[in-house]
Image (cartoon, rainbow, N blue to C red; front, side, top):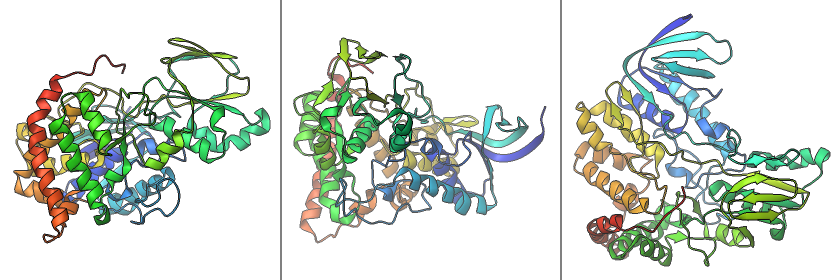
Length: 477
């Protein structure tokens, strides 16, 4: 039974980063009316479910939506990010997305927001609280902003078996250990399960809160290459680290003879980091850390590299490649949720549907905003899809040169379009165009870096096909 009806130009499914960044640019660039539907009770998507000590990987200055600044622009004076620009924590991000909705989108008078609702199909929306159904008539297009929805620790189910009475928690539970300890006692041993950024965050949190490094076991099926956060700083005082880092990245791509050689060159120039210098990483998922954070993680010496967990038992862990004994008072921390769920690629523009995807890795917000700009200002669907060609995520190391080639090809296409080039140059989500454009023409050092970036980018484009044809060997996804 249909309880009510709504007419709208665009139906946006999802009020996370992608949906809000798309809607924000659509409101700016057109007079469209938008309906946004989401299962969460407030905007922000997965940030509503994230652990409280999570932060952005990148500076706050180029995250969020185009029209509303995030953060204060300050540099951290203490902590493991000291000297670099602030990283918004999860609670700040939830507040920011509330402001986007309540101070930007809803006051426009052209946005209708349906929280705690599920989109069934064909514009039918059902309230999770009452079951009431609303038929949304879409005059233009439906925008599926859920393509990049991640799996988060607090809402996913582990892929391994858990015996009764095992203390297994997501990282969300760590700050509340003092409360649960009143019943169960404080754990003295910890096993962190997972090799990605969530596991890195959990390990750093434990160590910073006083856990004994030797009391932590870290199950790491694969080691990871990590982006050095200093190369992501987009303020003028970091010009040589950021733009110089990009020039070094391109030089590594131009000179590398294989994917393995490429990553070693990226490490040698300081663009990439790894936690254990004695183990060769086999994955890169855009995790970003400071050098100080890597040093903290190196304090953990009990690294378990025996594949993935099969089951947790009372006194041992069953692994792919054996068993590992554990103490009775062990707390297991599940960090196995995937930040980016692997899905088959799909064209962004599909007749009456838009599926925003990654157009410049790893900038999801920029990609969504650019997709909205292209939707408003271009008519031909084939041309729109060419301007919004998808960039593959790096599920394996072999994907890295493919990702770079796609990034650079998109940038070349955008640069040929004057209006699009100018929009990108003015976008706060772009990150680095202003840094290059603002370089003093008389600063010989900065101009030399820009010249190197241009020269090595051309050389990298020539060599990337060779790297794409090489392989680093079998890798477990």
